[in-house]
Length: 617
Image (cartoon, rainbow, N blue to C red; front, side):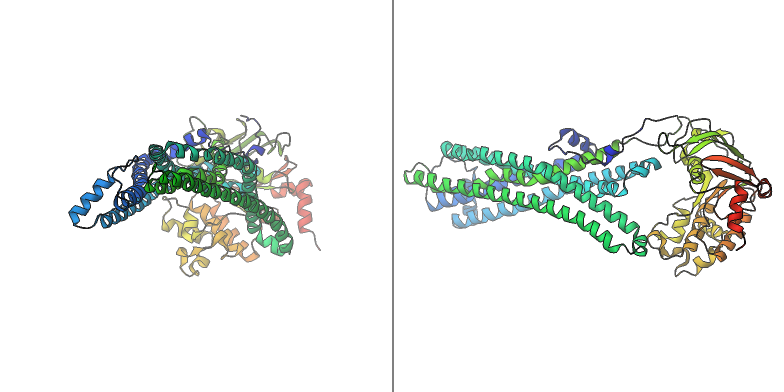
């Protein structure tokens, strides 16, 4: 079984984020479709809000100024029945028409505010729910990528996709909803303006190409700029994650100033780009505001003359000035949304690139059915493996482990000891016919089933935020509270756990920093043993434990490994002298295999390693 080499640089590359990528928006519909009823309600509400937004200037200009104050009996502009409604309210309430008109205006204002708020909240609700589902699918997808993927892709960039990029999509979808809310009253206002005065309306429309050209120029100017801003944010996240994850090393190496200087350079570049984008946006906003005021001046100049010549009513001129915002606001909002659109499209491309990254561990079409309990035999035949093509780590490795046997694997650093463990747990793909578990090719076993049968304790293992019990059971409902305590007792962890403030219900901090290194490793033993695997793997599991704690663990392991196949990897040879057999690796090749006494008698590599560690000083 082989796979074509992958270009991981494509995952790291910054993408263009072409504005209004319709294919991307169509893909987003998959997560938004379940909330289409909410979107439909939002659309109805925005139509109502837009209608009320148009009617308020009509009441102010045509009803109050033209009909009530000026006494105009007829007007070319449609009043949508507002005059008749005002008269009816005045008669019904026995008040002056001006009072009725003010009351009607207040009702329209309240209705517009209420429906507008309801539109925004329903829209945000649907968008947030859809993106929640997208984030869950993205997290689920990233959980199933193999170890080879995370060997080559920076965790900081992955975090950016799950957090910042999904947040950018939220801004995109909310911005599209805002544009819809702006364009509906735009067309209604345009129709009314054309019915009042065609020439003035066409004069105002001459400004539209100018604003459109300015918006297009703004897009071209900021497209590359916003992409660089996004790249700088990603670099900041990556650098921050690396420094915080390795904070102890930073402090021990007294590298605070050097790391701060490096972060400062990245931060300064981000600041420069952000300020440049802010200057461009501010310039664009000032230009659009100026064009709107120029348009109002044109209305006053042209409309004032028309009023004097009795070709237009005063209310019509005021209506034009009120509608100018409805006419220009969509273009202004579109320009303001350009930043968000570019960021969001690039973010969407990165998210879907991650979702489309199909690299995974091969799973068998028809997984082998494992018995209730494996014998624990392991067989390796002519196994070759390399993390990178052309750079082998294991060369023609062949050996076997008998059921219930305790095999120790030793060798110099880089000899391939830990690599074998990763292959046994199927963190990487290997060809068929080279690694067998109870005479079953591991490639025929589903990884989920295999990893339940192989328990691995690494030197550097992960402690999750949560209680001690949660960290041992790991959400496995088959592991009861009694099983957790039994496992802890057998690895001598029960004593220190009971001494914690809430015992097994004590919350552990991130990465278990409120425990000592020895306590964390004891907890890792309890975690693996609670799952009761048939094969137990200890990869440098006692390398960082003090002598007293190691004595407790070695005492527990003598009982725990009885009747269970065990593989022990260690540099400290005194920890594996009781192994049934010892496998010696060098440069990825099997050099020696036998008992401790046999290998010492051979006088080979094992004897040399043993002499180096136990020579008299």
